[in-house]
Amino acid sequence: MGGSLRAELVSGSADRPSFAVLLPDGWRFDEGDADRFHEEVLSAVEDLPPDVKRALEPGVRQMVQQAKTAPGSSRVELAGVIRQVEAPEDQFVPMSLTVHWFRPPTGATVQAFGLRMMETREARPLEGSSGVLRWMESATVASDGESGEFGGPTYLIPIEGNKHLALLIRTVLPMPEHPDANMDFVRESLFLLSDSIVTTLRWKREAVQS
Image (cartoon, rainbow, N blue to C red; front, side, top):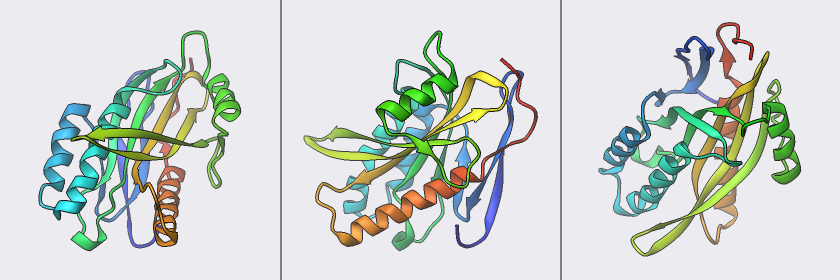
């Protein structure tokens, strides 16, 4: 990531370790519920040009939906959302990362879930990370009679010593139906930004074993 970085510390609880992540200027980690994020992000895009606003609103709905679900009939709780909150109009990035506390389906472990993602979603270790798995996801979102595809990398971040709890981070980015070479370059650059943010995540205290 270019430019200066700022550390965001996310407080844990009795059974969840605190963690820190480095974010570029203008980005922040917001804790809270999905409905509040929906309202805040819609408010943030209200002043953007109409074309940009139309492109982002379905993505916000997708972000909220993803905050409540995860693959594999799993138990998920929203920890927060990483998003850009300060940027000139021509530098605004229409990408968010939803961060979830993740428990695999009953009877499964984080490791078993990761192996299943490797088999079914072609998940692979994230370069530069320690034990993080990365795979691609996408979904079609309908809005006002029109639909658009949104997606990006999803990351499974294990907690050392804990077999039944992990972090799941999902990237939400508009995916053009007919991308040209320039759009492909921009999209891949944003995926690299997403990767680089995830690789900075560090646990701040010993994880509770489970």
